[in-house]
Image (cartoon, rainbow, N blue to C red; front, side):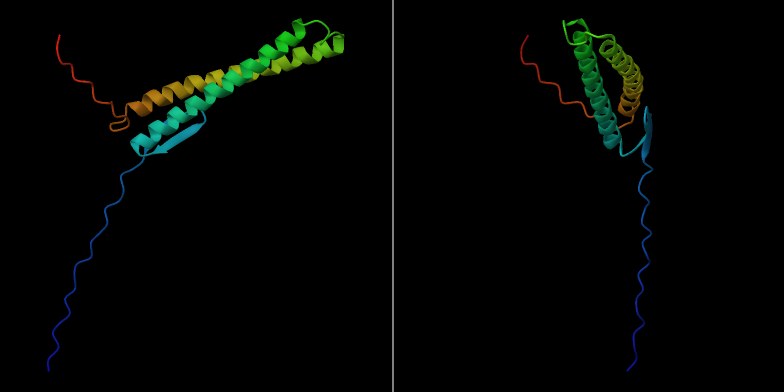
Amino acid sequence: MQESPAVVAPLAVPTPPPAPYVVQSGTGRITGAPTEVYQAATAQRRELRQQLERLEEQRQELRNELRSDGRAENATDRAGVEARIKELDARISSVDQQLAQADVAVASAAAIPGATVEPPRPERNGP
């Protein structure tokens, strides 16, 4: 009996995945698929806004402490509270700058084709 030659199927070469999109943010680079990049940029912006709100609340509490009677009555306490306010002001400024950069990253990510999908507009029936 004669053996039939084995049929060899050509190897399929896998297509490489598309290159990830990259958006520069205030804290580094965000890479991934368009929707992932957009979602990451908006999540970063949301977190920075929350941090900014917490810092501003802390600053307000310390400011109220300075103004209220009896809480920062001696010079040492007052100087300590003022130093903490100064530190918070520096952090607030830093987070504010990061937030501005995050806004730019969100705008850049939104410009990537396929990053955002607008919901369908409601049909208007009538005048």
